[in-house]
Image 1 (cartoon, each protein chain N blue to C red):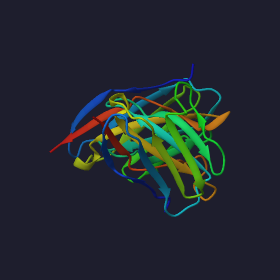
Image 2 (cartoon, chains in turn red, cyan; image 1 turned 60 degrees about the vertical axis):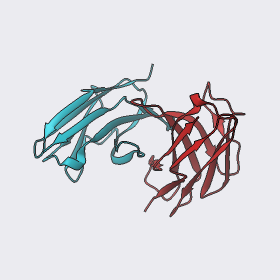
Image 3 (cartoon, chains in turn yellow, red; image 1 turned 90 degrees about the vertical axis):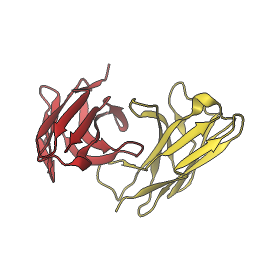
Length: 117
Length: 113
């Protein structure tokens, strides 16, 4: 149980285009979803937290107009990287938590590798 | 400042051997501590999660310990296997915001045959 999927697993896009990444909780209702970014050999960095039906809360330094987050249902959140640039190339990971999971537990997705050329 | 430090940064061991990874934190007030395993190019997978009142928890060949007084934790891996090669991340949450995970920089473990 408590499986989180991401799609796509990797994507290559040209500079200036937008990319959408999906995060789904497959077998539980995710009341809260989190989006992280991880650069090579570094720790995960929280970008934003979203609750179903509410606007996302962004961490300091994360541009909300560039990284659009939508959490429209209890099983789906999307991250759209708008006008992507090479410096946005990174590993994006989502996680989800919900009332049916273990207390405090966040279940992580497998990640999406974004490369902007 | 809330911080989580791990040691060693990297570790190489032979298959079948045991090893222990260390985690020190300054997070206060403390809520819980987790250990995750992250394979290269994959998302983290939870190994253990411990709250203030727990001082040891096992998950198969993985055993985590917690000393909330000294703010230290360890992850012991028994009879290592090649598939244990990964990064192991210690993550702590503060009581005032358990959703905000404070990540350590990880220990990169390589197990050789």
